[in-house]
Length: 79
Image (cartoon, rainbow, N blue to C red; front, side, top):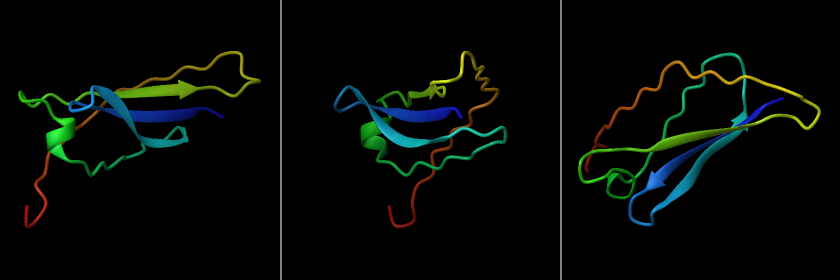
């Protein structure tokens, strides 16, 4: 079993913040992040996301392939 961790860069604290941790599957896993744009978007609109992957201690090798990342900024109603 492979574990994944998804983190987003916080521009105010200059550090990555954990947003999701789960077992990896062979299917697409949509991940919806509700976050404050003031913290996680730079003044130029840049967003940094990183994924980390960890194999089972008995696994000698595993491959991780990411073929697409989509990001959409949507204002919440009343914001």
